[in-house]
Length: 416
Ligand code: SDX
Image (cartoon, rainbow, N blue to C red):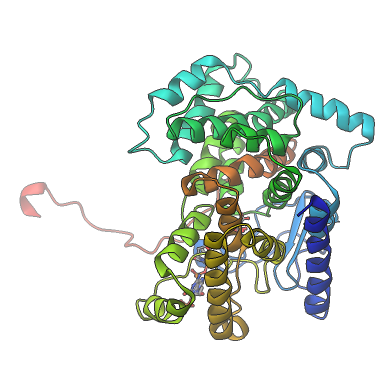
């Protein structure tokens, strides 16, 4: 299996997406907005508009994901995570000289200060989630950076580059420490994806694993105003520092409704155990009115384009071992069952988290490290959008509709 085969799968997924979604109607939200606009109140801020952006666009009806005008299928097939970060942060794909300067900057920042590793070693692995450890580590990076309180766009951009580079080092170190091993020193000869894989697993990836990790990092890099991006931007809008803002993003991403779902998916697939059990397991979930992890999305009412790419890659990886094959077959059956019941009518399809965990598992990565991988990628979107907003900052401060009583007379405690 080669990187070329992976790219071919992505191209086929893109063609399938085109065939299936091209006829879907174009929703709003791309045309110019005439302020002020009237909005309705929906729980969870569904449909609420927080700002304008040139960074990325998710078209939920058509199943499109676009970074600064570039379709995610093209980027996944042809680009690299480093190029994608340049695109998101600086607004355009780099020339080859710009890319080598950008790569050198990222490589220069890969090592993290020793006290951060010391703090990570102090965190008890039995009681701590790796995302909580990641948040602590980023907070510690901020505490150690004498420039962290300089909130200029220029300095925050430099810190963003540092964080893009160091998030991978931190996640790698956390994974190793959780296995009772020593963190590894970054390898400057390797690409961002290959070096991350190496620091997490201790092995330099082959061409195919490097490509798949790179594709995964590209596809998770940005996704509209998702909960963790919004959290990062809200913290940054008070002119707090970028480290604190990113700690907010990590904390939001941790939850099972957001980035933590892929970990749950693999646990569920293991619990199901065999293809024959899929139906009864699903019916029990439905009867208990529980959500099936890895399905549904606030914005996508069509198939998530990232899942279109990850599905075939998970299938490719399934050929590597009997265990991978079983897990993949259970997943494919679960998709069939869920989509046949909820697809047409409720527009519930697999999301990015459904197949990503299966891929990481096939790469030999521990289940509890799946969400940190999401953070290693999403740091690009968090920082790009926080920086874009910072350039014309206004404190985020929505209002709630108060539904409680307005006037109650105060009674002394003995009369209550
Ligand atoms: C990510 O926002 C982003 O962009 C996020 C993300 C990114 O890149 O940043 O794409 C990454 O977070 C992916 C989502 C990972 N989470 C999961 O897989 C968890 C399982 N899915 C869900 O809980 C749910 O679909 C959400 C949280 C993703 C979205 O939830 P919403 O928009 O708040 O929808 P809802 O919970 O209000 O559900 C609406 C209806 C309900 O039915 P009714 O009450 O109207 O009858 O859809 C049903 C739900 O029961 N539904 C599901 C379901 N998801 C929604 N039913 C069964 N299984 C599901 N997974």
